[in-house]
Each structure stands twice: as C-alpha cells, then as structure tokens.
Length: 225
Image: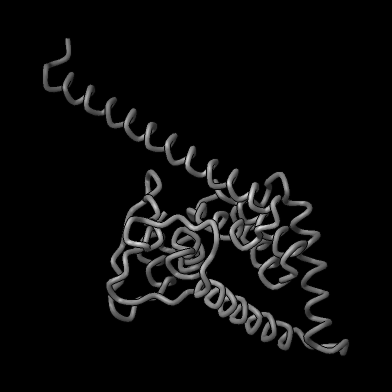
C-alpha cells in the first residue's frame, strides 16, 4: 500500500499534467482562431490585417510551420514581396522538413532564389560568394521592410484597454527571458538550447514584439519556446 505522502505526490502530478494539457488545448484554440480570422481577412482582401494575425500565431515551434507556409503564399501571390515569401518558405522547411507542403516549398525556394539572384545581378553570371552576399543583404532588407510595416497602423490588430497591442500569451511549456546587456538572439539560443542556430525559433515566438527583426534591448522580456 502506498503511503499518504506518495499518494498525495501522485495526485499532484496528475493534476499538473491535466493543467498542462488544458493550457495546451486553450493555446491551440487561440492559434486556430487567429488562423481562421487571418484567412477571413485574406479572403476579404485585407492582406495587411491577415499578415498581422498570421504573425501573432508564431510560437517558434513546428506547430506553427503551416503559418509560415500560408504567409509565404500571401507574400508571393498577393503582396508581391518575394523576399518575405522566400524567408517564410525557408522557415517552413526548417520547422517541417518533411511536412505536407515540403515538396512545394522546396520547389518554390529553388525557383525563387534563382529568380532573385538573376534580378539582383542584372542577368549576369555571379560567383557563389556574391550570391551569399546578396542573400545576406536581402535578409537585412526584409527585416527593414518588417520594421517599416510595423510602424504603420495595422487593421485587425488586437489592442488592450490602454490602446497598446495586446500582450501575447506564453505557450504551454515555454519560458521567459529578460534580455541582458550585450545579449543577442544567438547568444540566448546558445544559453537555452546549446545551439546558436535556433535564434530563429526565439525570433518567431516574439515576432510582433521584435517587429520581425533581430534587434533586442536590455530589459525586454522574450518568450523562449
């Protein structure tokens, strides 16, 4: 027979699991609601509002890979921003390399990269080094465009009673981190994941707070997925 202490510990553990599962279901419900609202705005031609809602669904995990895919299609087909479309296709493949849209994403990525490099080079042959440099410059341009968009009032945003953007809930299983001086997304990723390359996961989870950029400031609170 189990002791009362062990029985109590078992009960507490079961309650904790049930609580976590409940939080996860609520978060999944919020994700689906944001996705549905984004699709409605996209269908109505409100592409800026759709982008904001799609971006608010990011949590830096494979669960939101399809959000990147939908954003890529929106940027490519409606907003005519191939730079942003390519970025989101790449993120989809990073999060879901064998996902349902992996074949289409790989084909798009290959074609878009070739098309963009041709445009940037004016149709002239370029070296691999030049291609890497142009791609890096293009990524910087994408971040600058994201910041410019974030400075404009976006329809469809969710605001709190003070007129500020509503604070994004912390996904189940995630943590928070207060930015220290001289930290970067890469150094924070190294601290929590022992892998600097996972800085993009942190960027995704805090996409709206960072205006789609990689710039962080001391004192900021980041969600660590």
